Image 1 (cartoon, rainbow, N blue to C red):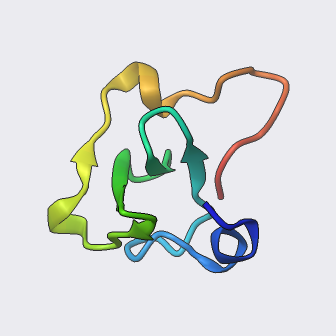
Image 2: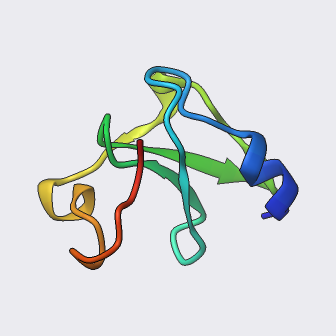
Length: 69
């Protein structure tokens, strides 16, 4: 995922910052608990196409680092 593109993208619902999950090829909004797919290098920013994240995924990877809006 292009870093410049990622810096411009926000969650379409809350307008919060997204985190790119390279392994799953998804953009994560921890605030709304949605994972937006990236298909063929193109982010699909439609809430209806997003996957609902489970509780463990919504939590930041480390407590010392803020993540999201």
